[in-house]
Amino acid sequence: MKALVYHGPQDIRCDEVADPDPAATDGAIVRITHSGICGSDLHIYEGHGWAEPRFTTGHEAVGEVVEVGSRVRRFKPGDRVMVSGAAACATCSPCARGRMDLCESGGASVFGVGIGLAGSQAEAVGVPAADNTLAVIPEGMTEEQALMLTDNLPTGWFGATRAEVRPGSTVAVIGLGPVGQHAVESAFVLGASRVLALDLVPERLDAAAAVGAEPVAVDGDTVARGLETTGGHGVDAAIEAVGRDDSIRLSMEVAARGATISIVGVPQSPTIAVPGMLTQAKNQTLRLSLCPVQSTWDALIPLVERGRLHPERVITTRMPLREGADAYARFHAREDGVMKVVLSATG
Ligand SMILES: NC(=O)c1ccc[n+]([C@@H]2O[C@H](COP(=O)([O-])OP(=O)(O)OC[C@H]3O[C@@H](n4cnc5c(N)ncnc54)[C@H](O)[C@@H]3O)[C@@H](O)[C@H]2O)c1
Ligand SMILES: [Zn+2]
Ligand SMILES: [Zn+2]
Image 1 (tube, rainbow, N blue to C red):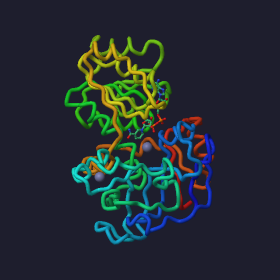
Image 2 (image 1 turned 180 degrees about the vertical axis):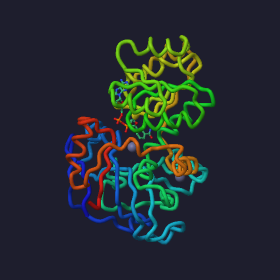
Image 3 (image 1 turned 30 degrees about the vertical axis):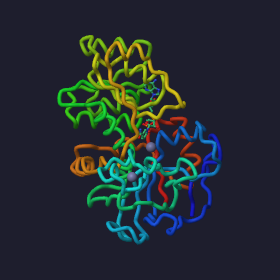
């Protein structure tokens, strides 16, 4: 089958690789129709810490179940499914409570970030613990909406819940890629009265403004303007969706005393520089999290189905899987306003 393979920094290619082995997963084999490229894939593309050569990439996918192992109860061949970005054991006590991120067998494994679990920017993927890792795409939901439910929308939502967004909260979202855009919409659904949206890219600020956020361009004056618009207090909750030292600092500076800051941006170096004295002086709570995608589906699937969230609006670019090398390069360069790339494995 065809799959995108990491060969080294800025070198991801569409190669011919072995089909997934059903016996190896005892889960399900999903024939993929569409996959996405995530901001996290760009960290891989840039070569941050991924020394292993040659692994298939990708952790956002939708498709059709073609084969199930003996332990799979909830799915059968022919089901149209979304594949969570990460799989966990599904049997330990945290997994049973829906917290796959706390899985006692070592945490959830993300597809396509090394040789562990093969990636889904491919024509097919093997899915372990399929009963827990897949969800049926409801009638009436598009594949593109479902694709956004495999990682980016859950992460924006989880980031907002971890920031303790409540009815009437004032919120800032720092970084307006797909995850940040979803965090903006999620904050409103959770009852935020105001959402300040911070980024450097004009069209991303516009996209957040289109769903009711107040755009604040990131420049030398951002903190002053952010504080001024909140009467000098700062926001009650901040969601950081970049993962850089400067944006983490910014999220603390625009947040009020006692605020909760929820970092879902993946830190781009093993250590992050936290302005500890600032945070301590403001008695802020700082949280860093990886999203347990499956645990958000009960809330998010109906919200998308019934038109309360519009995750597909972030998709700007559609390309065939075989042009994956070019797709990565264009996404990396943010060429022509590219915000979210969807790869078609069938076209
Ligand atoms: N925690 C999780 O479970 C999880 C899941 C998915 C993605 N992520 C991470 O979330 C982050 C966002 O993902 P994405 O797909 O939206 O990525 P993206 O790269 O498309 O978006 C990042 C945005 O941050 C903006 N930015 C850069 N520097 C900034 C600064 N100093 N201040 C404000 N904005 C700045 C960029 O202009 C861009 O719009 C990435 O770090 C990704 O790895 C985490
Ligand atoms: Zn991701
Ligand atoms: Zn587990």
